[in-house]
Image (cartoon, rainbow, N blue to C red; front, side, top):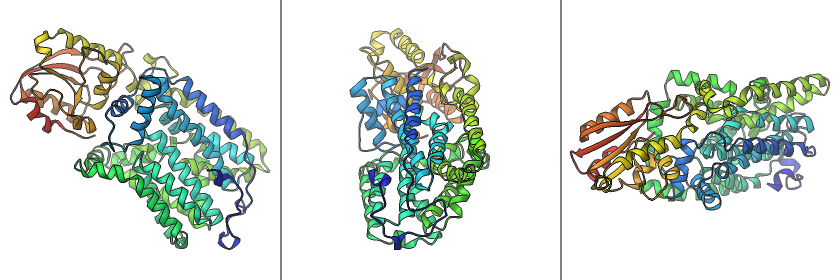
Length: 522
């Protein structure tokens, strides 16, 4: 990374394509305030890290950390590895687990400032680039939770920083560190591969073939592919489960309505105050005669169409692109503000207002019983409430079973979050490890294959899959009865609120023989 902020002695003038006036070869000094902004972002995230509780995905990653393998159904190995490190250092600690995405946020904010500098920006542009990233709802929301998205934002931004540097200097040797960044990103989440492919296509469309047709680009690609070997090995030995899960997600999240929702939500990925800024950045990149810079504009358009069509219900899939779009737009505004300094103060003021408005939606600043209204915009917060109560309810049902029946019973949950809650928050001498048919947890097995009693935890979701699961239990067991209702002290409506715990007995086949049919992806 030091190469990215040093002088350009490694590039020759003959390889530097002409660029806009704001993109001179000599970089401006780094504005140290970007580190202060990144530090303030880290402090803010850590200050709220222990509020409410674990997210269902966090509980799942802790569960994965105890079952480490070369890959998993829904992500490669990096996030479970970080979760394992957190377990070893801090145990089952919410604050300890969320230290890592907060650190990723620090790096992403700094990268936003460095990108503005790389585009030719001075102190004001760097400051706006860092502030724009630090106040983006997508960044604050994603980096509050421990998961692949936090590291994905950082990886995309870091890769974009190297691409912008290569585009400015023509120094193709930097494809080697770009390959390492891409490889680490692929070890975390597959989506960065689509970003890299979109940039490559955009480069060809922008007339930058010679920037790709060299041994350093080939070496960078090779390095990135090496990082994918563990994932590919696991996939080959597990029926290419990730492809099956991706198809299931596409069926669930695709369609014209979700595509429209995806496009509308792009207006709030960055602060709504900065919509004009990132649009100016997109125009700046599109009009550039530097092929790699224009390729970033192409990548935004290509990815917007691709993910809208295939994953419309997941609008954050292109959130990382706004890091380089805001940085580019900050350079444009800096030029304007050279003669209109009052406008700079207005934008910074509106950013502060925007933060105050979005904080209750993306971070747990409100009392838990007042957060329900945010579910339409950001359902993640409601999903961090109520897990200890769920575990206590299951524990009560389990202990109410006669000892002889408990000896031949298993705990089964509809999804990996419920299994993770029981396994991480309910870890005790008497409560067994919960099993589930959801994603990777299915591969860990059915528990006791000869179990004659199944204590099943089923959420309250308006989805066909839940009704089908209850129907399946009724079909596979002669006796199925609801014995407890799930809820939470804050009375917040979430996936588990209103769900039930069932006791299922007299299976029509052995539990082990029923197990293969219970696998589901989503």
